[in-house]
Length: 551
Image: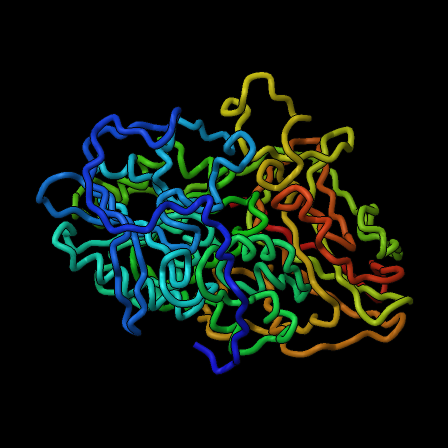
């Protein structure tokens, strides 16, 4: 929690067209029941208890839907937590994604929350699924908060409420991707006694440094549409207004950074190199948590596609069966890290590029591989830079793979076998959900100061490695014209395979060097740069790119 005054704005209450009527009821959905034509039918009779009241420690009431097996036997429960509306009735839905991200319509029932496990999948496996509207969302009381201690405490209270229900065996797990993963970090850090395991399926950690102000550069463009469609009857935290008012680090932003060292529950984590939102948070959450029993699966496909693949659901059940049902099924023999990689002389000079050309080429440096090489892990660029035209610079960097002819390559995040027949590479949407460019980083020059990250042990620092960078973002240091300053820019983790004769291209840009998460989003991002940027290499201003070789 923080003493910083938090700004709120009205939540979107004009979403009645996608709301379902509010009414507490208990009914049995029969085997074969379908929500809509073409959806997945229920494989067995399922108890559906709708709009159940859950009272938190401060008296606020949340509402949830409970799906569970018929009968009196107590079962473990899975809690997906977010403000996205319970049971598939919100604005956000995989149905709104082109081609459903390669997930067939008949694979899900429509009862699942966005980014969440499907009750039609998990009830037959002997689990209850409790879809809750977070504080302030839709019919739940209070104001919507964006992560932080409050969300963790709300999650704690909800976990304990679930565990006390007669249909629950006292064991609760959490699962889901994106916001649902972030909520797991905060809830687990509060240490609810009956939270027996978590499955954060890709999610950011440090909201400021990894998302809304990555590299000290304000980027509210993604969060504007997210908050616009946060449905509720009251207020919601205005994170974009808070960014305008508090650019520098303070207690408000500190509260948006989960206390990973307080997490001790068993973890099933996933991560992809291709996410432009979650790679850093997923990796740090796995590495820096204090859990002794934790597993990481680095997946080669986009998170929604990965979430609903049958082999991955079976794998997660193997984990949950062990920790929520106490089954000795050999899970602990699972490799702790399962990794998928993506197969896609120091000059003494100065490279100059126009800082106001959003789509301009920037500065590019290439390296040819004489043998097959695998790069895997964090990278860091150390760049002496200057500008003759302004007192600041926003600098973006990316590592790209080029083929033997020098053509830039992209990795497709959804297998073509899961897309409509006849779809070609040219038909694949030009955004990051579908196309991955490469590991990237960014930094505002005036926020360049570095220090060791507070609170980390020597063991944790060693896990992150020397490529990991920490900028405190606690002061602004403007540049003099033509002043050369060294920028230490951390790049998010990547996993790339280069065959003999292929090239690695390191590019320095003035604007987002990767594809936006959604089409058109990059047009909403402000380019704060002016004039020219200079990258100095060699001589009295040595520069370097530090990359990790696999193994």
